[in-house]
Length: 603
Image 1 (tube, one colour):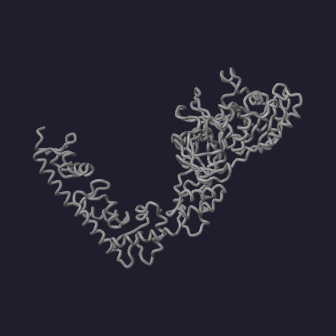
Image 2 (cartoon, helix red, strand yellow):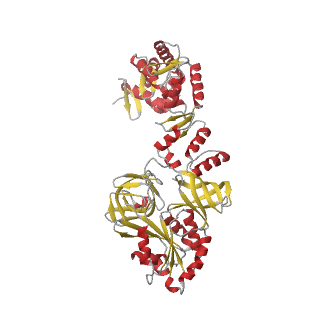
């Protein structure tokens, strides 16, 4: 099912709510305050169906103090009924609402002149008002002359609305849903409502609330009180979820896990009257305080801007937003870079120019050349609205790169020289080093295993390969293993009761993990080394001597962790391991956390 979502816009008391009532009989003003003041305060949602077509209506308030509410509704509009009282003409909120529609790129605007029954010559009056509408650089899709009192033009408007085609939804987009209402229903539980503008959702599917990182299960889906197994954009959607309604808030964003990260900043292109100051950033149904920092002025009222937020936002590339200051519209725009990109100002502006043009091939070329140690594609959807397959295809078209399809990283080939220098450094330190891609990747944070494997294979003039291990060319593999076996044993022997962890031992010798593990297993099997814990191996004689010292001390006192730490200057990790090994001695007994000789215990 794909609905057409139509919203209202216009000045207060110009007849927006009355128009919806005339179209579908729905009374939107249900709050006591709305009835008393005779104005719309909250968003109201209704629909009109005909055969297989459905129109969802979002009625917004027109009062200037409620512009935030209007904006939160407008983000969902596919088309707009722009209502103007033909007797009053365009007023303050008429102009502001039109500017918001323009910033949100809502092009299907139907100009509805209301209260025509109160105007003697409404056609002549409309001709005068249309000149003002043209000055606003907006062309209405169609013009209607209506009266909610006499039903003038209402039937014609309804028929025209059903002739409009819904927006085509991109099936590749990920579920992305801002909450606009939350409540709890008896026997059902927590229900949220919102406008589904991107992606698809199904009953039984697991989703995540990005703002509190809570995983949720979709128990039921409704569209205007009808149940559905699944729903895709563009539709008004109610979701029944398995959580306490108090855990959710208006403006929270629901999506699929793994696609969006939160950041305290973003870069964007902005149209409006802007300075470096605080303002309110409105996106979806979320409004948050931010501070703007102009990066570059592009035209009279157009800027590249860096925003900093007081809380994390989970923005995505090309997402639209509106900016308010003192509750008045000052501008709006599109997110170009939703993630933290540590570039200097000049470089940042170059990137934003490319992103604004959506020239992703040049964007990837730019990132390749500016990120010395490669750039990732894991967040390609959030950054570019590209899935991994699309992003990888672009990356593969670049010259002089290695694309790690498994880890989703893109490296300029110049990094291989740096990796090669590291290998030479390891071999210079220990000519008997036994290397692997895993060994290199553990020690070089930015390098993936696949990149390291590529480098090692390219070093065939310097390295031999046998049994999964690379080593200095010309070395005998068996003698190499024996040499490292002896070296590792001598190091453990020298370190005594304070041996390094295996990984530090391997790093010191330039051993890959597999080779190092095999050597320790052999030393343990031959009885030269004792394994006390997962990552604690000690030379046998050192351990036996320590146990003898413990037994000597037990002749005159008890032993516990604190005493061992103090007397032998050991960390708690070592003290606990050695005491647990002491517990295996037949002559020792443990009471609570202390150790005694059995012969010294009366009971």
